[in-house]
Structure formats: C-alpha cells, structure tokens
Image (cartoon, rainbow, N blue to C red; front, side, top):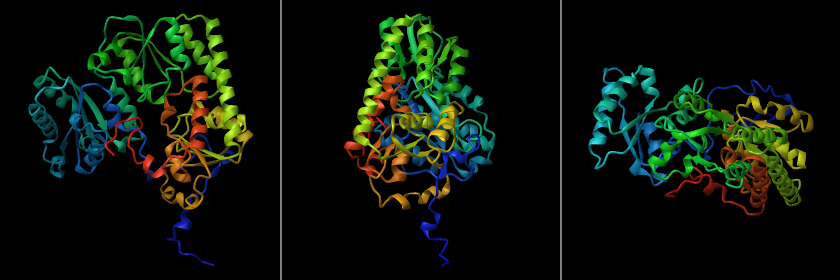
Length: 448
C-alpha cells in the first residue's frame, strides 16, 4: 500500500553497519542538521577562558543572536559586546571602518580598558574581502594598552579551517615569549580541566613540575605565564594548528600524547612524556600497573550493573568514539550504535578491529538532514539505551547518559576508570534529558 512521503515515519534514518562503511568517506557532506543538544562548547565559551578578556562580535544580527545568548546564559554579558553589520556594508566600501569605529565606540564607553579584546569577524567579511590587517593596525595604534586578537566566526569555511580549530589558535595568540621556567609544563587545547588523578598529573607532581592549564588561570597574568613553559603537551586533535603556531612563536617544544583507549597507545604516550621530562621509567611502570588495575576493576564492576543494556556513543563525547567502543566491547558491553560524521585517521585501527569483533554496530551521521526525524524511532523506548554524549542521548531519547564533551577531561587508564564509574552512575541515576541538554556549555555557570 502506498504511503504519503511527507509522513515523518518514512524519513526515519537507518544506521549503516560498521562493516559496510568506507572509513575515508563515510557520509555525504551536504546540508547540515544540528541536534538540539547544547552542552557542546562553541567559540564564545572558548574565548571566555582568557581571564579579564572582552569579546566583540562583528556580524549580522541573525548570527549575533546566538553568541549574545551564549554569553547571557553564562552570566558573562559584562565580557561581551557587538557591532551589527548591515546589508549596505557589503557594497559601500566601509566594511573596515565599520569594524574599527564600532570597536572604538565600545572601548571609549568602557570605564576601564580590558587587557585583551577578542574581535570576531564573520563570513560576511570573508565574502567581501575585508582586510583584517588594516583593522588590527588601526585598533592597535588607537589603543596600544590593549592586546587585540583576531578571531573568526566563519562556519561556512568548514572545508578549510573549522571555527573551533581557528579559535584554539586565537586562544593563545596574546601569549608572548618569556624567560623559561624549567619546571613548568603547558597543557594546551583543553576547554575543560583534566582530571588531577590522571597519570599525567601523578608523573608531573612526582617529577617536581607544575602544570599550566588555562582552566586554572584566575588572572590575565596567570594566563600569560604559558610563555615561560619549557614544554607544551596536548591530547586533543583540535589543537594541532594552535600547537604549530605556539612552537614557532615561543620556541617551546610540543609533545602530542593523544587521548586513547588502547592499552599499548596509552603506555607509549606515558613513556614518551616521562622521557621528555627525564622521569624514572620504572616508576612509570608502577603507576601504569596501579592505574590499569583500578581501571580493570572499575570496568568489571560497571559490567555487572549495566549488563547487556544497549550502549550508544557519539563523537561530541570523545574524539576516539571507535576506540572507546572497542574498549567497551572487549569488556563485554553491548555497544550497538555510534554517532559520528567524520572519522579520525588515528581511530581507524580501532574501527578495523570493531568490524571484525562486532560488525553489526550501526553508525549514524549526526548532521545529516534526515536525522531531524531520528527520534521518531526511539521516543517510545525511553531509557532503553545507555549513552555516552548528549547527541546520542538525544537521538536515543534516554535519560541514562554520560554527560561529557571531548573526553570529559579523562586521560589514560585513570580516565578509563573514571569513564566506568560515570557509566555506572548514568545507568543508576537518571538525568532529565530535556533539561540537561538545554544548558549551553558543560561546566559553565548558567542563568537558566
């Protein structure tokens, strides 16, 4: 019997078996859909990490609505200003002067100049061919006491540099080279704090070093101390462009120790880090043995409670979704779904092993337009799934979910232990899905 094509039920997306996916080109990249899970961070949240800084957005009113509401929800409107662009600014030759005069008006109205101002240009400036160097030079000449930083809110440029990648570079742009502190290590690329119980902090503490983390900075002076670090480390992939810029400008070596759920890769990264700071290799082995034992015990306890509950994971929760899925499957968890649009080359090994171990795992794109109707299948099966990440929780319509973004600050074997404990807690203590995903920016103060 024929059915009307405009019925939602006919548009429910179907997952693709992991064994049938082309890893290098999994989905068509066209029109994008954004699910209403708002815990993920955006460039407003990231810019707010710089203490005592102010943000000025120069863009069309439709775009301004989103960034202004983000600042308002964070109770940080005192750190936000804006200049609204008009259609005639695209052809009257005043685009640069509009930015300069708008920013100048904002600064002149302030009782006290901020130490740093982040100026965000938009897609309109790129389309119009705006010369940001002219703008920056004029603002620096007018207000030499302010450190001006160029930032970009350009979602139309995802094919080149995504806004999140560009923002990470801008986040550290004000940092200048300082006399080296041989006992300071800079952790870059993280919007949220890293667990102080992780192997990284254990090694750093025992080696007599101190970790610089932007999430711990209280003043602008604290923030600038990154320029004195003797080593930069990072474990999230989005920081690659920023790391190259920092090593070039500050002449500080950088060590990438990627977030991973693979035992051998975790060990390799920890030994590489220990070697970089001349930490005793035997002690590293002892720390790994202790942390791995704790992780193993926590995972087994979690499995006893969660049992065969179907589990879904999404890429907003971790950049290594396939690696996490493989880890859980090896412990006996029932991973059935993964939500991700693009796959990291560093996660392909885990993907290949999953294809053999559990080839029927379904993979869904997050931003495909038909995902608008993805909840039609699951909304009558509330709490059937245990999810890791807000996007998967939304699509699966469950109140059982681990509410994290970009790894949640968990690292190494200690991070695996923490993940097991969070999964257990998520299974036993239900969250209100609708309310939880309405909060914009995890770990941020909210006015809601």
